[in-house]
Length: 232
Image 1 (cartoon, rainbow, N blue to C red):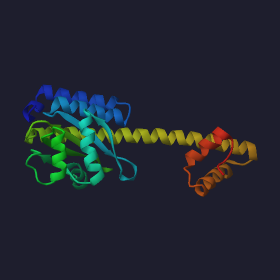
Image 2 (tube, rainbow, N blue to C red):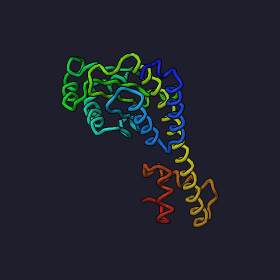
Image 3 (spheres, rainbow, N blue to C red):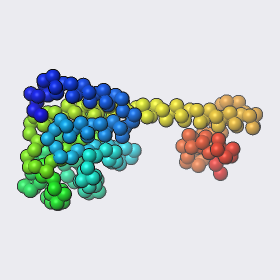
Image 4 (spheres, helix red, strand yellow):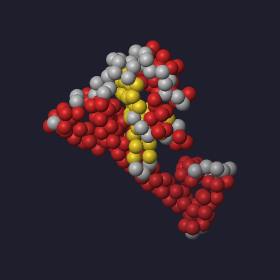
């Protein structure tokens, strides 16, 4: 698909449908899977995948269209070299026209070539609030598969994906926060009834146990509810 096709009604309808699919996705994993599935339709790629930054700066791979993508990501997650690492670090699109001739990461390129991949396009997923949240990786068994048109479409797709991922994570965090408040409230009720404490004192007991045992407040509350005992 060219950028001209994208501007037409068919391309507009495809992206409109993608936006709806992302909005209806049930979580982060479902969201990025919709993105990579759409990438295969909208771009001249053989495989696609998404790597996301999670807690502690770690990378996880929640969605791919082929196991080859996970192998390519694994080559870079361990060593930290390659287009994925550059795209994520410098917040920029990185294109590898041909793994047989690209000399920027020769060891990585050789291993990717063994997997049958000739060209690569890595596009950062960036939001205003969180910065880079991941990378959309596009791969082709053909050399020089990604030109200016494909890069432009991939950039638009990445913008859709970035917003959807940020929104999905926000909803997950909200759900976890609500769940944590419910658990803490139940645990406080147990302490108030058993030890005749008021709400402030019951919460202080939970907070102190959380600090003393280096355990999340939610987990302390969960243990108290399940065992009717506080952590040692």
